[in-house]
Every structure is written in C-alpha cells, then in structure tokens.
Length: 119
Image 1: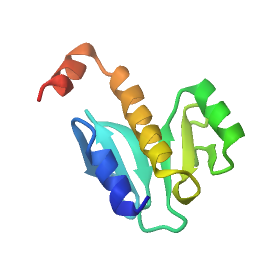
Image 2 (image 1 turned 90 degrees about the vertical axis):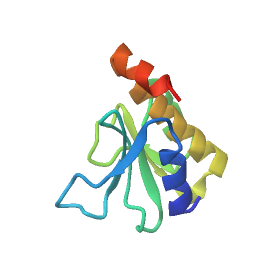
Image 3 (image 1 turned 90 degrees about the horizontal axis):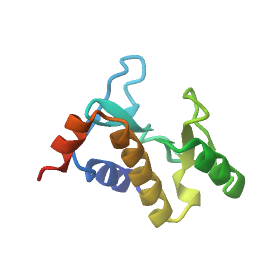
C-alpha cells in the first residue's frame, strides 16, 4: 500500500478525520474517530509503517505469525501493533485498519456510536 492508500483507507472509515496533534512530531499523521486515535503513521517515512489498535490476544497471534508486525512503538504494547506495510498483503493491512477503527468505535459511548451510524 502507498501512503495515499493508507490515508484513503483510514479516512474511508465512517466519521474518521486526519490530525497532526503533536507539535514535536509534525510528520506524524494521526487518524481519529470521535476524537480517539485508531491509526498513526509517518506517511513519508520508509519503510512505511502504521500503528494500529488491536485486541491483545490477536496482537500476540499476529506478531508471532508476521515479522512485519511488532509491538506498538511508544504505545501500550498490549493494545497496539506497529505494522510495516510493504511486507504484508494490501487486503490484510486494510483489514487491520478496519479492525483498529472498530475497536475504538466499540469503546465509545452508545450515543457517539449511534451518531456514527447515521449517513
């Protein structure tokens, strides 16, 4: 996947938006839903990597199965993975982004989730 495809996939999630909230790291792009982060990436960095939220048990399984997936850098390593994009099929990366988004949305209050469900 290219940086543009990562951006498009993240922004394609319902209610998602892009932000650069860390003045010390202006190159770090953050993708959020309802103010909560579901993906982080330095889109110009090579190799291209994206940090994604993950169910803790699934995170361990993914790390064991794929050397391109490691514990989240500077994040809670139980809940976040850093994915080196080029080493995995595009479909898998898209699914990991969608799973991260879904985990964040599931943790939102019901009223916020309902607002996201509206067209």
